[in-house]
Length: 513
Image (cartoon, rainbow, N blue to C red; front, top):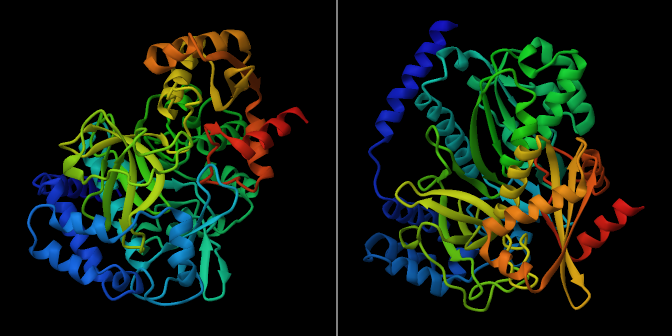
């Protein structure tokens, strides 16, 4: 087994060395575009929007000719437009609608805001693309000199949705994590935990209990999942075995691969469960595809996956392109990968090998290194607060909570913010989920102070229109109970950082009843 680990690590280093010479981001994206439109040119969507001509432009045109034609021919789609116009036919079993063939799998996704489930097609091409990117991510571990070769012989715990998918009139549906786990390559199954039997469990609480009971029998080196659920699981395991840290049960745990939400607000509480430091690797895996991952040690962001079935466009996230409620304006500006700038915030559009075309996924990102195509997630197009021009992003909120957690030495497990009117002006109401003793007034003052430092617009409006900041401290379990009451408990579900309209009303009623 030691020989296996040594061989794997050597292979990983050689593979990484071979990958260092890559073509430009623009060329990678042009090649992906050519493949996508070429593959889909005979679909109903491709015929409706002239993909044959787009294929020719991508093959023989100069510079951005193909992209200018793409923008002219194909409108931007949100989920409702994509589903009602096209994916509904795919869901009904029709072939060759937006991607060749019949789609067998659909990922159920509601993001963190919408109440109704979305049906996102997962084609064979997308499943293979996700597997390829997942393998590439594992290969990046060879760049981490602190990780021994023995890591590659340990168990990989992947905490996700059930692999028991629901059969519906010729297709299967479930969480993307459940779909991908059900298709794990045979060579990886010996390392995969919790194993096929537990992975099939649909009851989330029972699944956590079963993992907890088996945890003592596993030698886990690598954990994958949403931070809130991984932390909850680790606490259950520590309590079950009556130990001080997770390393008393899994002494070889070295890597936590996390995604879905910013890890920083969870870090303080998470690290209290460890006996020694571990390596953190961030990923950006959405129901629409594997978008980005951390590619090197000490990276401050994640590199976009530019050469594996995803074509990216970027909409500057500003008042010219988005309304105060996060809706697109009539003629938003869109850019290719070689036209973006560092430090600026963009909303993402995706065209994919699952048949999404110019699809607004709702996430916002900021480029921190254009040469590496390295980004950080800053929030969602609808998950920000700008009642009076304060332009408060989820990124700002996460950072403020992280700083306050460190200062007060408390673990803030969850939080959300509701904006409202206050007399003739405006207010923010923070709900903080922590099981540590803390004064709400102190929390309010410190969060407010940090946001004043982090965001100039916020600082200006605090002197004028944003007159009231309120903090309510709740047990962390309150947040999980609300998610459970809405059927949103499980590996891919995250609590929204900003609540608006009906969701805000439902939440406020829930916490006061």
